[in-house]
Length: 175
Image 1 (cartoon, rainbow, N blue to C red):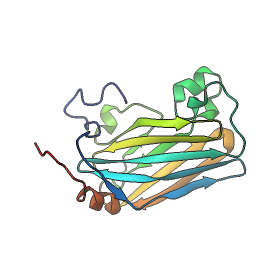
Image 2: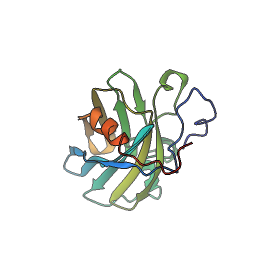
Image 3: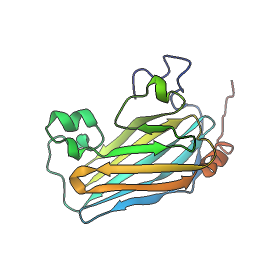
């Protein structure tokens, strides 16, 4: 998670730890090319945001010592392989775009995207992301760009499904 999140009241807050999120039945294969598949799914809604998982599968195992470079742009650059980084952009109906390629800024403080842990092995990569606040009504565009595997695809989902899920989230101890 970015160190700056939660340190300024004008920025969205990190994912709440004392909430039972609602599962949202949306997901899609974002890209399917000869050597890789990228999917969006496992969406969960909270009262003030949502999280989701990006799963990337490779036909052949990745033989890099730093396989975490798939979701870490700095690591990919440090090993001289910037095209190994799988960039995820989320564009909201109000035009705001957030990305796993950069930290939240004052310009994107209305919305942010932060990594929340994942798993990596030779041919399967999963990363959970947190985004807050809830998206505005309209299309939510998920884009993936993975240069080493010739992936550049987008998929739209209905943000209302995420917002409806937020109403089903359980807050055991409201403040």
